[in-house]
Length: 175
Length: 307
Image (cartoon, rainbow over all chains, first blue to last red; front, side):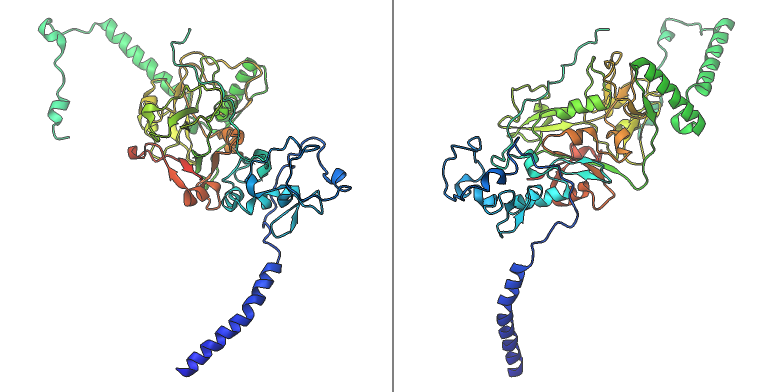
């Protein structure tokens, strides 16, 4: 019995020693990449806005939360605005990229990985083809849309749209 | 079953009270009845055959005839396919009630894809506006809503088309066998055999079948020239038509038109027999319902809530 206890203690000590190392290893390993390549359309940039570095390369990084007056005044942030600011998603060092919470840079073509950090359930459904629109073949090549093709990333909530005309009420045919 | 006597007892002929003499059949009457019967038999025997009775050559020539007729009438190169069901496929549909905003884009995409008559108007999809307070309640559903913008507060929307039932009441009542379920689960109509009795419309609990009361009209240039003989080929007046899961598209692997047009991605389609399909994912992971489940029609059209 004593031997068993000693054995258990030894194992626990070993685990305590190894656990932090394991965590560190886990943190360093790259985040899981999507297994299959996803066919996505190009991100919906406003005209003449990309590459961002065309202007930003020569500008100093200003991380302060402030009203944007000179440029990007049309952007209204209604996406958890209380907790979020431009550089939480847009990368300050490489302006033509976005970044994840881990610091890993992702291109605008892969922006779904950025969205998926918070909206995990939607991300999972989207990858399964259940969230969002798909076109193409039900048994073959399927075209996805990026999150940003439907949701404005700065104001993701859908806007109301005009419906198509109501059907005509039944009546006697003319002839 | 317990009282066959009352059921089987023939009604006494009305005339007996008035007419005492049994009616004699004249030679002329007999001859004309016999001739009519013979003509009827001849017309059935030599008339149009059912699609599955036709030989390959006969079917091909029938389809070419249709193509020529439609091409002439609509001044376009119309094709009429008879693409068969793929083996190992059972089609199913799923619609996300939590996303549909009732914009009716699907209704009009369907009209264009499937060559529905514009006037008189035929819509295979009917979008029902329902009250959130009442839930799915057909008694208070309104298909004629016309606000400036959708979705409206306190409302949700349930688009209804053919539910492609596995236990379809419509196919059982057809007196001519003009409608049946295909091996891939699509309930189809042979417009050549439909006599327009509309029994199937009475039998369908979803109002999914539509009758061509007038001569269907499709403006020239608006006809979808890619047609299927059991689907979107132009229909004559006096026949019933319905959603076929876009048979002309889906049997070639494509998504139905309504799936591709939905701006909120509420419409999903796939193979029920494929465990990797979107449909199976939905059934296994989401809250799913079918309409009027208590009628035991066993629809292959599922409604679900993704959120």
